[in-house]
Image (cartoon, rainbow, N blue to C red; front, side):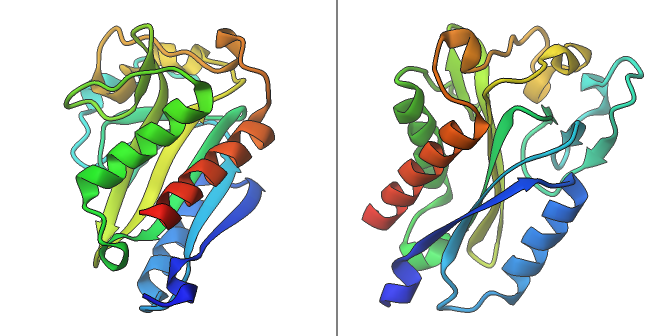
Length: 205
């Protein structure tokens, strides 16, 4: 493995429309070569519901609230993205790093748990939970051994749009955010720290 391949670049992109971000990830993944550095994209999205591959429409949204609904290429069910949520897209060549998908998912979860100093996993329901409420959702896609999409950490946002759906396909699942747990820091700070934690874990893998 070359030094170039071992590096992980973190890019802060600000607020980006969901469709534009997905198109950019798809293009990056399609054109990357064996020595393309892995990248972590930290950003926020305007309000949008996204449904993973195979997600059921039965999980919402159940009421018209003006928030667009988009079919996504990632795994998982329905979730909500909006301002105040740190989205971290993980453009990582798993094959080159010798990281299996299951291990990568655990690495994402562990990075969130390290950041917030608490949290737990649920078997068969990827993400991070605190007191039974979901604080971070994740869904990835792997193409030619390369991961894209990633995770979303609720930081300081309006949680009301989650009430119109069954978050991650789980009826009655509560959601929470770092602000409500008394964790200091906004999206820029906590998102940046999360990206740094994951980058370190990848470089040490």
